Image 1: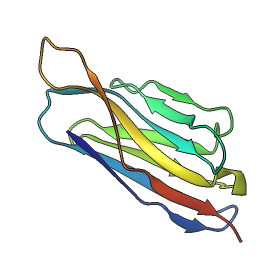
Image 2: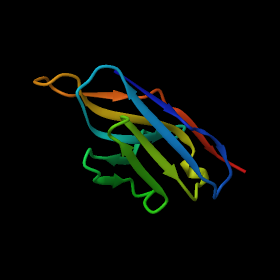
Image 3: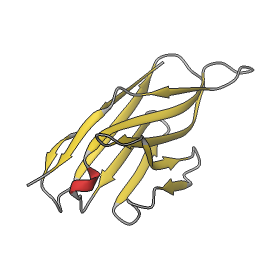
Length: 120
């Protein structure tokens, strides 16, 4: 099972960017999906999580600016980022709690990370 993230890049302050992440491989179900980020010299932090049924949780610093969504049929999760600030700069990682087969514990998979740079 693999997660492939895309959509990072350079954007000016106040701009928008959309990240996407797709799961591939053999599995029976994806539970929670989410995004984390890591700025230079800082610990990885929560950006947003979305449950299979659509319930969402956001980090305090992105509330009201970022929107997480998912497509269960396509096994994808997206992050719409608006009103971007320089503090949003970092490597963004998607993750997913995946049930590979019924009757076994789920596994947490991470994508490879995509760099978002907010700068003028």
